[in-house]
Structures are given as C-alpha cells and as structure tokens.
Image (cartoon, rainbow, N blue to C red; front, top):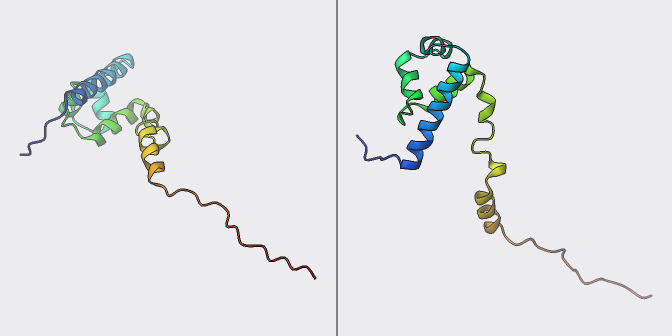
Length: 110
C-alpha cells in the first residue's frame, strides 16, 4: 500500500466527471449494463467511475467517453498550447536571442 492521498480538489473533479458521464449515459437512455457492454468493461467498474472513485483507471475513463461519443472532448485536456504557466517557464529558460553578428566591414578604397 502506498501513502498516496488524493488531494480534495482532485476528488471533487473526479466526482464531477463521474456525474457528467452518468448524465450522458442517462440522456442516451442507456443502462449501466448497456454502456459497460459498449465500453467492454464490467458494470462494477462503470459504477465506480460514475461514483467518482479516484482509483478508476484513466484508460477506463477514456474508453467510456469514447463509447459515449465524447472522446473528442478530451482534446483540450492538458493541451500544451494552453499551458500558459509551462510556456512561461520554458521561455524563461531559453537563452537570450543573439543579435546579428557585426563583423567589421572590410571596405577597401582602391
């Protein structure tokens, strides 16, 4: 057993995601068994996901979203182009851009 403790904010976000998945399933008129079958998982795993249990594998979550047709909603998750903090850190580590070299002009007046 590890000493890992899920931060409360993460627990809340996982619970919200589970509720969203449940809402999407219900709106489609699917039972837990229907969605579990479409996703290729067992009903207990889907129930754990809908209840927001943090130990549910991320692959299960992605598969369920795929089965619901919501997998494209994941495109913005952790998109490096929207990571303003990471981009700022990266640019602060870049060396200052060197200017053009100014070689002495060799002008010969003949």
